[in-house]
Amino acid sequence: MRIDVLTIFPAYLDALDLSLVGKARRDGLLDLRVHDLRDWTTDRHRTVDDTPFGGGAGMVMRPDVWGKALDDVLAAGTAATPAVPPAPAPDGSDAAPPAPAAASPRRVLLVPTPSGERFTQAMAEDLAGADQLVLACGRYEGIDARVAEHYRGALEVHEISLGDYVLNGGEVAALVVVEAVARLLPGVIGNPASLVEESHGAAGLLEYPVYTKPPVWSGLAVPEVLTSGDHGKVARWRRDQALARTAERRPDMVARLDPEALDRADRAV
Ligand code: 6GU
Image (cartoon, rainbow, N blue to C red):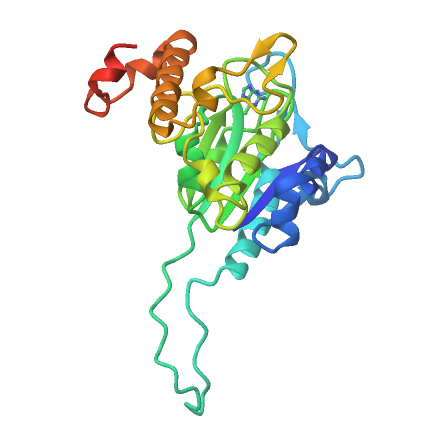
């Protein structure tokens, strides 16, 4: 997968050299490029913003600068993921059967904004299937609304929000999206089993509490069932804990559970 991040603060994304995402990049599983939006300005002051039409506080990011930047990174992404398979050798020496026509690459423009739709694990899972993600990080009062409108004609565009609070720009959201998506790419997480039981996974529940050594710490013992060796009992205890925790912390998630997916023991919790 290719991911392009456009920002006026490229250093914000330096953290993506670290940990699993950094390793995925070095292993060639993720082609992540961070660009300075000001590289597409043409004036001496490298201006990216201007005053809002209609008046009001703050500044708005100019659509012309964004348009040039986005056209360039989208064109580069198209070149990197050809829609048409390479032609066979002209002399027909390549005896291999013709490759099936490749599907056209799926490119998605993501615009982080507190007025966007909420970014979720389901969205991360969907985006992990794309060929190219472009994250357009706005600052100030946001990006001129014509930018999202213009690109909606040519590709998938999602304005996304992390939650109900206001940040100063889209960079933190770009970090969040890259990490949430990259860890789902094949080969990024050494043991894919660790993706199965996590919070916001298929079960629709928060994860159960976890424990490791020492068995007693600060006067607190690990729940006995976990050291019993009874795998059936452990599984039931974890399911109960996940249900109780979700009911307590996220009643909205319980309301969305499929009743068919609950068994009698679940209902007793
Ligand atoms: Cl994606 N951007 C900004 N600026 N603030 C936010 C947000 C995004 N999500 C929650 N608050």
